[in-house]
Image 1: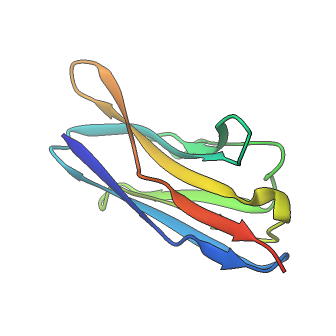
Image 2 (image 1 turned 30 degrees about the vertical axis):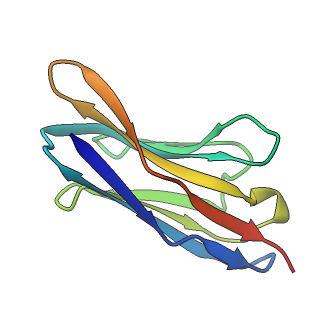
Length: 118
């Protein structure tokens, strides 16, 4: 079983920055892609950013140029640096990892609240 623990959420003013971190632990074989989704009240969960095992990245259009995703394969962690935050970035952010064993299984973190407000 793989467990994910997130940290780094909180309250920040518009224009500010936050860094989210997610650490995977447990019986880990190979981790393929890692990433972050978010869900705002009344909205569907949306992909924010993902990073593959070879560090190829994808971002939602709404965060391009403001957010940066990175990973540390030795520590099984994925980070999301969020700059120039806007009120519309307010959401619960969930990390995930795609764990490769005989099949690919996606594991989720518990979610961390990010609130952008003055």
